[in-house]
Amino acid sequence: MQEIKRTDVIFQFGPNNPPIATVRPGETVSVETDDCFRSQIRSEKDLVTQIDFSEVNPATGPIAVKGAEPGDVLVVDIRRIELGSTGFMVAIPGEGAFGERLQESVTRVIPVKDGRFWFGDELSFPVHPMIGVIGVSPGDREVPCGEIGDHGGNLDAKVIRPGARVYFHVRQEGAMFALGDAHAGMGDGESLICGVEIPARVELTLDLIKHPSIVPPRPVVDVDGLFVTIGLGPTLDEAASCALNDMMDLIHWKTGRALDEISMLISAVGDLKVCQIVDPQKTARVEMPKSVLPEPSLPVLP
Image (cartoon, rainbow, N blue to C red; front, side, top):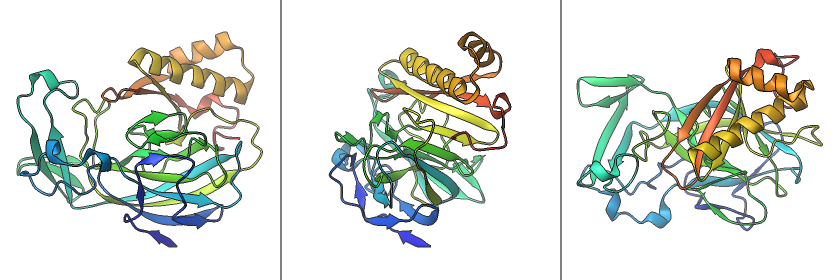
């Protein structure tokens, strides 16, 4: 298994990043990721207002996939996320949902041990490892890793966790895949502006669907009996509408059902959830049970 270190990172997804590794379709690799602060915060004395923001949200990569061409679908199976032993959270006046109520910058060290993350000695919660930044090259432009687009990016979707299969529309030869920004835990909304930010080692398999019958415009996730569309927009309403319409299109492509019937299904058994509300582009997702598909035991695409 190739082991890819966190020493080689990008700060923007784009067409001009040379690959740091190349894999064959179906190959499993181990990828180290740095925390979202690029290890610039090491103690509670280190404040986020003092760090170099040009190095925030690094993504390890890009990793080229042999044979990937525009119009293909990249399939990413997240097999395992091993977390570091120390996470961090920060609060910043003027930022996030609570920014107007916060008076000073604060950093908190969050130890991770025994499968839990700890707020002091008394209060702890089970870890729920997830990947915040994940995507492929947009092909025609550069997008900072802290931002979001149809290619992926800073999605901050809790469903991108061990056991998930994520599909991406390939827009550049090689796909040029990268990921980072792991969390030991993060609530839907990421309302403060961060989860429990932590370095990690991610084991994943990269594969291709050549000449697919369905090419999703944005990332689609298959996890735990659900399939999930992730929408984006400058407002939460627009992000929700994007995710809902992507779900309608996906079910229509897979089943041929009429749109009015699909809208009923989504309203009856679909869950609309917030991913994050703190970036300029918001993200929302729609989760549907795979039982609505003709062959729910099979992968969502195709």
